Image (cartoon, rainbow, N blue to C red; front, side):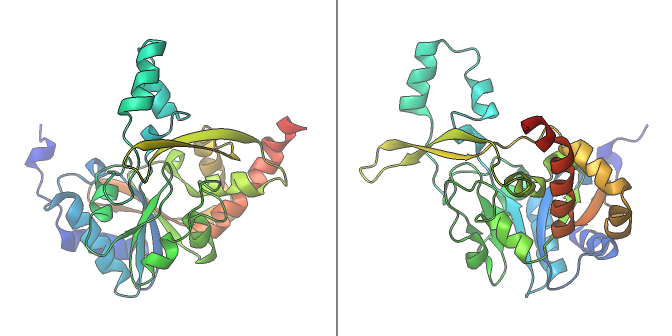
Length: 277
C-alpha cells in the first residue's frame, strides 16, 4: 500500500494553483488557519506554504495568522494541563521563576508550523498581546497588527476586529471550525454585557526580570465552534458563500469573515444568551 512518502511532493506552484481554484485572489486580506501535515509532503515545508499564500494574494494583499501563546497565561487550558501533575509548590515555582515571559519578537508561535514560518518571514509584523497575538505580511501589516490591548484578546479592538472591518477571507487548510478564531469576535458582541473573567500573563519587565499582568476580558469558549460552523455551512448564506476545495491532500474552505461572525452572533443570541438569563 502506498504511503505518504511514496506520493510526489506538493510544490509551491501547485499550492498557488489550488489557492486560486478555491477563490483566493490578488489584493485579498486572508486570515489563515492551517495544518501543514494535512497538505501532505510539501517541497520546502511551511516556508513554501507561506510563499504560496503571499504569491496568491499578490503585492497588495495580506496574509495574517494567529500566533497565540496560550502557555504564557497561567489562566489558560494549556498551562493548567502543564502543571496538572506538579505539586502546588512546584507549580508556584514554575510560574514565578521559570515560565518564559512573552516577547513579540522572539517568542515562538504556539499555533503550528505555518504560523511560525509566517511570523519569522522577513517583513512580518506581530501584534503585542502576550496570549492572543497575530502576525501579518503585506503593505499594511504594521497597521493591522498595531494596538492590541490586553483587555481585547480577540475583540473589536484586536487585529481580529480590524480583519472584520477589512472584509477578510478566512482560509482553512485541513482544519475544522473548532479553530475558527473569528467566532470569538462574536463572543464580544452577541450581548451588551458578555461574561467576563480574570486573566494573567507574564511579560518582560524593564529591569530584565519578569512581571505578571492581571486584567479582565470576555470569557472565551470555543467548545461550541464546531456546532456553529456546521450550522453556518448548512444555512443558505453558508452554502452560497463558503467555498470548498482541495489543496495537496488537504480539504479546504474559504469563508468570508464578516458574515460568519454575524451568523455566530445570532447563534449565540439564540443558544448561549438564553443560559445567561
